[in-house]
Image (cartoon, rainbow, N blue to C red; front, side, top):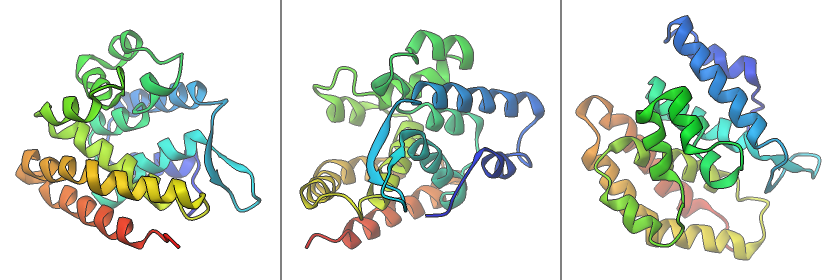
Length: 201
């Protein structure tokens, strides 16, 4: 995986947005990085150290930008914040709505396993394509980072993707407006390919 940092992240976004929107995205970036600051992933870096959780958040957001080529303020900000409600104490729905508006807050709430019971069925009822899109970016990054994980964890992630998430990503394609459909199709196909390529022996 390529090494990313704040500068390279914002270099991608600079041509697309006004200074005000870039400030909003930067604020989301700062808030998410702070909220996830004490968290690490199951994956290890090149030195054998646990990867900072925020690296996943940034990579998932870049998948939407680079692979799907969907560059919108709402999806970029929601992707940066996508695990904030579920996995941190600092990013609450009230805060996200106050700073970024009800629209972004709604996307992040759909993505949050809060409550965990009935999460996927509740998600499937959603008719907004954007939570599906952010979830697909999240899932693809999770699949891409499985190489150094224990066998049982890899097996669980692959099975969960096939058995529970493929139907969400099929629905994503159906719900997405025509102007973004090529991007989400590309994303869905990459998830299918990556799931098949995860080593399970």
